[in-house]
Image (cartoon, rainbow, N blue to C red; front, side, top):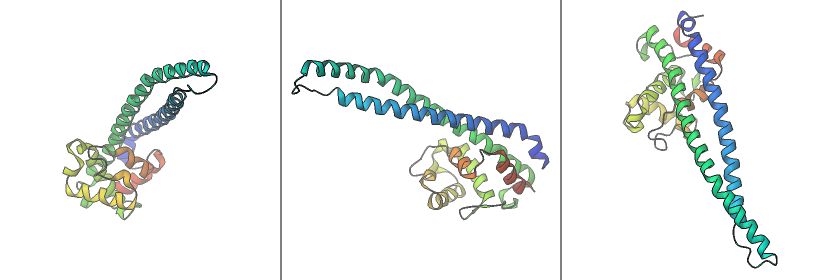
Length: 203
């Protein structure tokens, strides 16, 4: 194994394990959020008037209770929304750290991107090296506005959007850290795939 990969093995594995943990947590949050949202919608519908029905008083009581339950569910909904936003931010930051480890290895081994090997596979029509390098730059500088990044970064993500999907659109994600989307696309939630990719970029 490459010496840089050996030196950073524990860090990379730790980051990947944390990425998987946060992803699982985020999935659970979204499931709970959707359930609460659907429940609140049903309760809101139940709370609408039933004045024309024969058992008006019973329905009125049920509607009042449903309305109260729907109102009580709102703070929980807001809490889950906030937790989801926090987890998404944390997930992107940790994925950015993994990209930083990868790019640092490439810089240490080869200096500039133009001296790096292309890598063992293509991501759409782009070299693996190009995507890893530019994705790290995007992750570091996204707060400046993705439309204000260096031309090579923009060109990389324009191709990713066209060839992979809208999750890489700068127009739709002007101030978004794309690191999690990149890590998912590279399948770097598996250390063996990360390691094979990095071996091909560091040789």
